[in-house]
Length: 250
Image 1 (cartoon, rainbow, N blue to C red):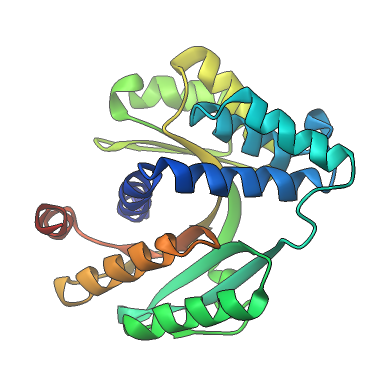
Image 2: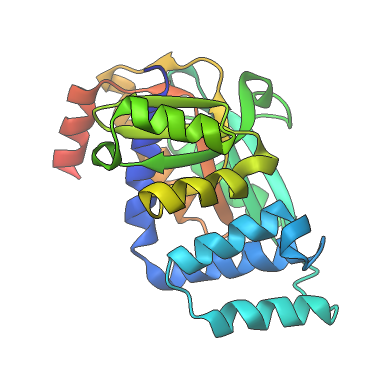
């Protein structure tokens, strides 16, 4: 299905990144802290609810989560951190959206810009590529959790908008505000998902040949390695045979 290789590739890189446990915890703590500034009422704050669920699935100690929430309730959250979105193009005309939480706009902008430049990309203005994406809640399950029909029926019953299944897995999308409810309903039936997050889903994908694929994956990895970057979305489509070569060479 269109876009699935792109999601799979990002999840592959994200999986490698998530093995860096300390760095993952730092990112999750930061996300909880910023989300809690809006409200510490989990039932009324879908972003906070999703952040806490992600932290629990990463086996973050409950005390760590509670400490951040108590700090937020007392008005002592990380007030200096703010959401920043960067948009640009990678090699081959691939559009990218980089989401960051930063306490220093100048530092983060410089790091993101230099990373794009290093790997043949260009950083654009805000909204220069986001019109090509839809903001969604995205949930991913491995293919062996259910067949396509069973996942489709369960997801729609839970309130999802779409399900795309292949031999690589199931990608369920929903409205951002429905992410937690859909995630909880599917977790009761199929267990915890591989991924459940807010994402930018490309409306169309850009086919990438081997000459650009390696550079794009290096840019993706370098962006995800930046301390302030929370997530990276892109609209590339790399054929499986090329992706296998890149994975084997990594």
